Length: 522
Image (tube, rainbow, N blue to C red; front, side, top):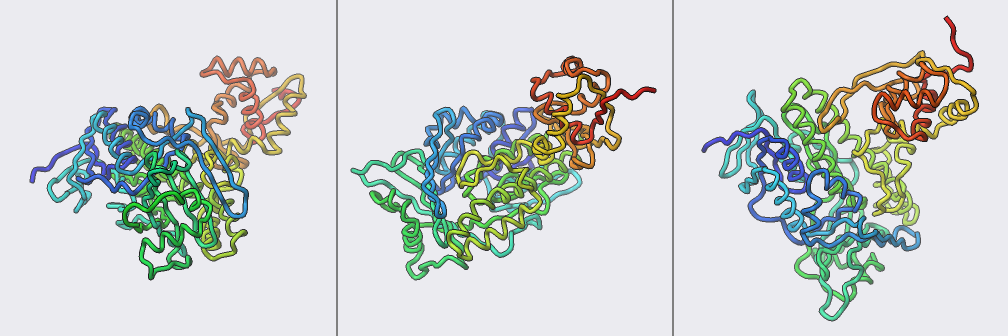
């Protein structure tokens, strides 16, 4: 069997695998994408929020999805805990996508092919081993070699299961999935809208896959949800849907089409998401509760960063370690942040139901997201399915903490002091330090100096896109704010004055700059 050499092998042909393959191929790398020969089942469905459009454009998939004829994601209808029904409608330009998994993967396969990636439909992978010259991967009919392997095989975790995967203890989730079809003479309910409802010992959600069909899923805990096992999967699904009475009411004029399936849906993370030659991408590395509706977006963000890390390592081997460090840290942070974001609505459900189903999930979410402070997720909405949920992966946790620090008493005091003084006299902070940390710069990973102080030990480089290092360099040279602002803008990309003043106040409040009312004379 001839071994086919490539720069990168990607295992898994879902959105994450295709997005990473397309991104790498566009930069001239030889990429092989190993996927299954048959398309996935149509009864599985995915929902992509409108906030993912920018990310889809970044990985080169937005035009393909717009042209694929998928159902627009027009908003949410939510019945949660004991709160009133919440209706949310998206503007046309803000719509995302609903699709069965087969249609979604077909669109992404086209994106990967058009970018130049080689699709190999001879999966699954039956063997994979790392050696001194890279990775060797074998399927039933093919053998491949590459310097890097990206495991984007989702829950299957072809490589992730080799000692990387970590499951949260004490909770297990099973998805009971049915395909619903509207009756011939009945209007389709809620076209384009996601329906979500919680009940005492579970929750249900539904997304449209065509104008007259829906994927309807009940999320249950085999150990804590009272299941009618004697009635089989169809009976269990019907019983759970009946518990979600308001969602079920919307689907009354229709019928179950085909058998109900049961799929594992428990959450998990990983001990490590990246090391030299191997990255775990998307759901292969971690899986979050679909209640957030951000699963595909999270996978795409992971793929985008994985492609940048892999490209950096292929083109600059000395940066492999820092690039993998950045990727692993960001993927861990994304998982913890999403778990922290789930706490408010789990609190609501636990308070309304007082049932172990919700109590154990709340305790687990608090533990998993314990190191994510409330200020770090201040933009989050405490309602499931809401698009205002913060977007982990867009900014690092350190960046978000710097943004949050803008609201601190130290920064407010510094801002008012700067405004009140006829002249200002800045010096470099006595406790200021600078450390180099990996960051994404122009689609590559590079080491960038970050400012560190006791008040911001995680460090910061930018706040509101204002360069804090540049502020620290120019501020001591002038005694008037307009002169400092002009000097800052001469050195590089200009900043709006309000953002510049906020960043200047942060630099003082964080201890990057010391401010005195009188000049220091030598």
